Image (cartoon, rainbow, N blue to C red; front, side, top):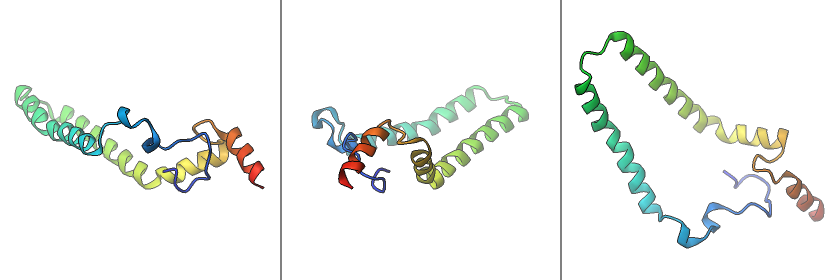
Length: 108
């Protein structure tokens, strides 16, 4: 996300953090995969336990799920553009706008 933005000396990428404090990438993938895979059986058990559900309730949950999917897709498609817009309009979103400006003034 930061690769196309101007460099800022006060920003350190996540990979440059303390190595002992970071969880390995394979472990993160395993954890997120298990959590996402767990949602299907949990939903199935809840569906069986709460079996007589009205069509109105089902429609509301489906509408909520479709809205969440649309938001996720829109964030993926336009996220970087919105991040750049916010950075150019309001300064850097992480709060180092003044430091970045001083750094850029020193370079020129």
